[in-house]
Length: 408
Image (cartoon, rainbow, N blue to C red; front, side, top):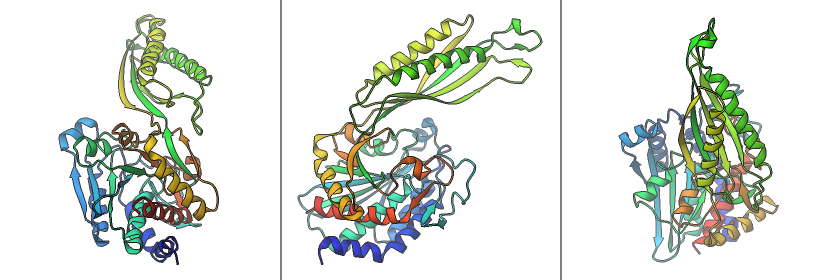
């Protein structure tokens, strides 16, 4: 029996244990906001200890977390050193996730299994890869028993807010500098590039007035509508811009939140818009932000009495492929095809992730893990998020086999 076959057999024999591990992770909420994520890190470390894996706990200072808009973050690193020389390969997954929202047919924190899928918030993105990475590591040590190189597990808690207090914090503090890294993803493609993201808060100011005498006020909502129309017109123009990266189409803009006004019978004096601008890898973030600000300012100037304040909430750069990622791509494609029985394409994704922070630190990386072909199928960030257990099993095998090659 080859090492690959023995790795597969170990994972099959321990798969029920892997599923139970994922269920335990799903049952500890990590809603962000509010972002009280330290309890999940504590539970994860406790479960890892049960496997004989010691997790270093790296709490981000409380004031830093509070200033960032969250409640608590403890990032985890598991370091496994097998001998001198060889590569250090890091595996990163994030535990924080958006709140569950409404419309679930299964308990979002239940980890229930139905029809071959495990349901729960973060079941797919990306607590499933806490499980796949952990059990791939365990299989590697039980079967291949590498004699040089190192593996690190990075379980972090700041992807939803951009990653600066997750991987960004571990890197900036000098706590890690791997040679290669694999980040949580889906099973049917290996992602080598992704979009960037600019998020902005636009506060539109008018002047409140009684609805019976509206002429004495300045309607901030009318001003906001004019600005929105200008932004949507700009969004239409983005469709004429095409990325050269397979899997990524064109830039786009979404206004995801609007709030304002004080009562039905009051002319609104203030309206707040929150927008999300996705940037393709070819775009310059500085130019993108300058253009958005210009569009907003010009539209506001066309509405007498309206003023605006614009605040950047997030700037996440796109991820561009680094030349050194070739061993990762080749290993995952080779074993992905063998395990899944179909080609695993290397491509880009319109998502943005905190993987870019490793790339910005000069660490070649890819995105690969347990999940379906599309975000839509996973229900990530929607009700009834789920991961197909067979995808989890097979992705764990692909990762274990790939680690065996990378440390050979």
